[in-house]
Image (cartoon, rainbow, N blue to C red; front, side, top):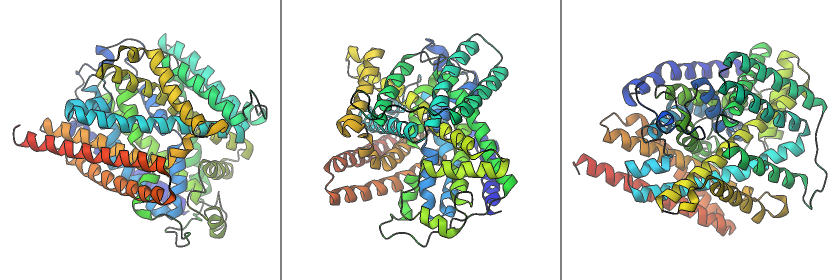
Length: 554
């Protein structure tokens, strides 16, 4: 029964966020203008810039930012107890993530669809742009390299998810063509989701596995290569061909998945087996503050969202007023996923007793996506009576599809960054889309195989830096939006206070990690972490100088 209270509290908070707070931000702070000519219309090229139906664009944005992070982060963070995790997800969604994602779309659209790094040059200065884009590139490199490993591991560990995951691409290609020809969107949505769920059933009885060794590589490594070849091709296609329809169908699939999970809670009324505050933590466990705020990123607030919002989403925005629906409601959707993840990994669906729960969560970081799949599948079976094998395949497919859409967008965003560098530093070859994509994929594969050897798991080496680096990026994005608002003479406190909180907690976590890496003698991570910390400090000082000069009339 406790789980229903968590769900009710979360739904009430996010409903307030959408109907009240986001409307206030849209009308009084960002002051959206329905007549503003968006970059999608101004630069419409049918490839990257393309005016898009707000429901389709919401699907793209939502599934691109979601990935596996709003599942993995909460599944790990509940180690400290369900109360702090639930509170951070709810308040983070309402006052941090919604304003951040919404604001990044608005700021980019107001600056010709430029990435948030390029916008920082216009708003703050050239030095800020150079520093900002280093952090952005590092985050994209981490996300793409690691999500390739995550999907490959899922394919090997849950071969039932292979068929539906690749079937989703075929379905998206068909729907993309039909949407482009103005077919009825509702009918296509229903047909696409039904087809996807039929493929989930087929996958549950038709597992697909690669040979133990192929081309001298193990299955994980071969899947990583296949995934990056696919991502390279997908990132160069016009957005309406694959990116938009795939993300939209995945978004609809998630909505159905959320309805199943939330419905299962209301039907079965499970109790919570996890402690409100964990008093049996291992001695080696990190402290709740500040680590909670970087462990749960997606689902509360995440810097990666700002890259997507200002990278692909802003270039497809049909009307400026759509930014609220896409950005803020996208954050609410992700917060809803994080919230139900917390219920799945805290309830008796995963562990029948508190003792069993403590056995699963005996150490920080031992749980993750697999824990959610196990708990969520059991929750749906208990509530709806659907066989466990099918629900397990369904949730495993959901995780894979989210990670895949994030990887699709991530490689495209890396290409944008490289092309922007070509413009900024006057290097014409980098403006070529094919060359920029090859460089982006090569960087990811060099990290994956150069640092990880034949297994291709090299991205995991720098993954410990992701949490703090990603949240620092969120703080810097809010910093750019704040300076922009100050220059426009609008109230900035609604982005300023979240920015201060995020930069303090994320920088604190980065320094703690720096000490940890130094003590372990991990000089690669020490170097990268130090670069991120120094870069952040320089950007903050630069922005403070600009604000000071502006207030003095300079």
